[in-house]
Length: 111
Image (cartoon, rainbow, N blue to C red; front, side, top):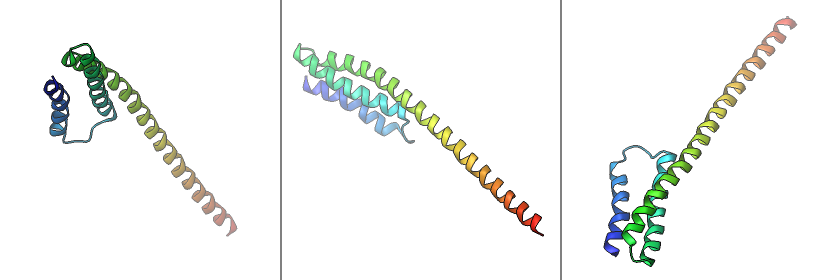
């Protein structure tokens, strides 16, 4: 039984680590963490009732879904923050341009 549990937990982790050539997104990280946590919790609960493999499989599937949903929400917030930061930078650049223009006009009126 322990061998099955180790395979169920280790195989997805091994596949993810070998197949990813780009960094994981927040959604993917959340899904992975949820799946591993769910599988571990499901395996523990399943072993208490005599079915650790089934518990790990069910817990992993539920954890995958929950983790993906949470990761998606976090990723959306990150994207919104990045967009706001870009807007702040654009506004600062425009303010700087206007200050320079104002200084140029002041110097021009002095002559």
